[in-house]
Amino acid sequence: MDHFVIVQALCRAALASPTPAVRRQVERLREALEAAGSAEQEAVIARLLASGERTAEMVPSRLVRSSATVTGEALTPRTAMPVDKETAQPLAEVVFAQDLPTEPPLLSPAMLRNVTALLEEWQQIARLEALGIPTAPSCLIFGAPGTGKTQLALWMAGQLDLPVILARVDGLISSFLGTTARNIATLFTFAARYRCVLLLDEFDAIAKLRDDPQEVGEIKRVVNAVLQNLDARRAQGLTIGITNHETLLDPAIWRRFDVQLEMPRPEPEARRRIALRYLADAPHREVLAGMIAWLTAGGSGAEIETMATSLRKRLALSDPGLSPYQAVLNVLGLHAGRVAAEPRAQLDHTPEDLARTLWQDQSLGFDQADLATVFGKDPATISRWVNAARRPRSRRERAT
Image 1 (spheres, rainbow, N blue to C red):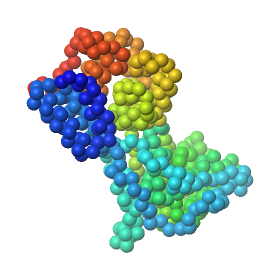
Image 2 (cartoon, rainbow, N blue to C red):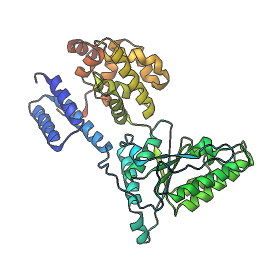
Image 3 (tube, rainbow, N blue to C red):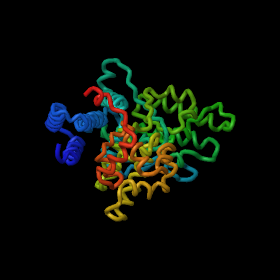
Image 4 (cartoon, helix red, strand yellow):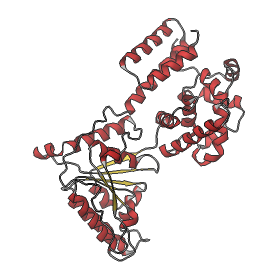
């Protein structure tokens, strides 16, 4: 097909936010290419369609806020926050519903189903209680730093149209004997008075193992206070705990949370979508997103955001003719700790070797037109580079 590179780019852009009509037309194009015997081009369009399906699964099907059935007074900007009596440090801050995130972190289909089910339950608490069915008013979100746990918790509260009382660990913890436990009780009493979600970020700081030989007796009093207040809050409101260090939590703490959600590190397609979100209007954003997804294998969403933002700045400040390959090399030294070991080693090879590596890795979905954009070369040069070591044919190609 003449001008297939342009057709491919149009399909990719259309499938970023597809309607049923758009998908049907792209399907028709794939069928036409298959009928014409253009196996390689048909495989490219098939990959775009498959990628579009995975993306659609990661996007919440609805973002309509629905108020949960939670009793209490309404929080206002004039509501006075509780404070530590010795230091006058506030024990919490309020994030009102209008200031909560309108988009969640990019979630896997399984994680999205779990979160949606929990939100539906929280929206129907009164109905479930009327039927005599126990509810799950608490949730613990755990996982590696930078995976979007706090953003997810805040977004969940926004979907319930509830403000968040966000506990401040620096205000809760005190060097005075018994004060930390008293602060925890004060915080929970305050939260019980209002319609809200109580969010305990960095939860491990006040919920550590009580048999830790490195801790003094005070931590046992603190954990006991947390347990007692979590028990009391079950009948008073919704609670979300967040930790990066789940192994530090006391086993009794785990049992107090009805729902336990693990935030995994993003898979390749999720990494690409995160990069696209932060590359915004950067030139060659599609291929740059693919490069970032490859470079950040095993990385967190926060690391991907940082690298994407750095690349976008480099492109904005550099010569317009700078290729994505050169842009990546220019910022690589600034993000050495974020780049997976194998891609970092591959970037030390010649452009020809790197092009062959990217071409042979079918999970990346790079075709020769993409590689021409990556390296700023003409398609004939890329064809010569990659044909020096033929890529194994895909299952679809072997069937044609």
